[in-house]
Image (cartoon, rainbow, N blue to C red):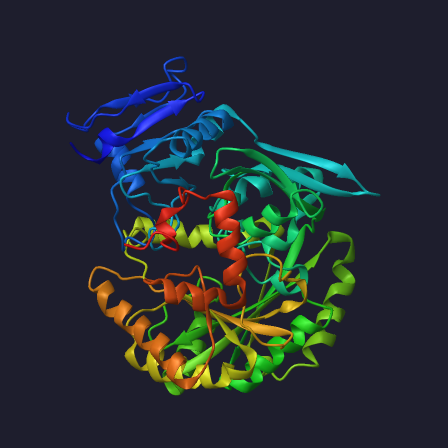
Length: 516
């Protein structure tokens, strides 16, 4: 008798069914509830298993028993309760748009929930509320994509203030990590802009939480890697949206000047978004630049080996177009950049926020989007960023040239981060830290294992050099790694798990409490 025959799924607490997997999985559907046969089905077909066992990273594959496509929040509650009340609890993972990179949304031998199916029934949706005196907010289903939140709020002249670079991610997914982009220094990460949530705990309880109500769960879930509950609704802060943006890219050959200007821009008023990236000899052409600009940059990259590109954006409304230029020139006068290496565009606010989408479509057309993505995302202490640049970016990434990236590097102001949240940042007293995103893609001729070896070399270098980095979108293979990652937050993190998911049912793909 195999594992599945031991999983009695209980719906409405008193209804029992035994799942028997002795028959072929192809085209079978196991009913979760005898009285809701059309709403609560676990799909075990080949296509469902494929969907539930793959993600954007294409590095890990773990086969679940099946895929649940919930049509209501009750479906989610029933599934979690059936596992919790069972004598043999089975693992459950919530899957958004499948953009995890290391199997975090998988559930080996368990059930993966396709949260996107809630869209088909408009369960929570996107609802804008508030007023000028009390403030505006939007209630959003955890399954909703950020691009749809943007489309729903802009007609009201409103928008969230903190974003990710790529908008085809779910709200529940990003706030289970942190949700960062170039706005994070000015408004905090996305987790700092959540007012309230509805969460289904690992016991199957639907709990509303906020800073003043069930606050222990509220802070645990923010950046909690899905360990304490499934986010079914989040209330997000809104502000008045600009109509257009001035978008700049500034190229440096001096790392010290590059970081000095980045840090200046995030600590002074002026720009609304600041990021940065590497430009290497093998970096692909960027559609932001004209052909002549690209030629100049390529020549400089060939000459220097590595360049640093500071990216900054100024929001504006049409009525202030005549004063915005003067304001920007004043800001540039305080920087260390060569004025001949400042490039700019003027685009709509929507087009700027959705900028990665056009790149995605190009890569999809070339068959280069659905390839392995052995990413390594790190938070690096500000005090060691120069050492990290030389030891990692120059001596490893540039010299080995295994991937064309993109490779992101920019400082984040810590003042908007609440230490009560589960999300982890470097354990020092500095008021900022750097985020580094080595967003590798293994194309047809690149073995992802080679890039993974490079990632390990980077981590080993940081350990030996005493650079106390923290992983963002973390991945560890042993308990000691996780304990070191959470540091002084580990005890509280473990206690919250014992309180809200004592049978360790949720998000097994993170492999925090259920390492093999």
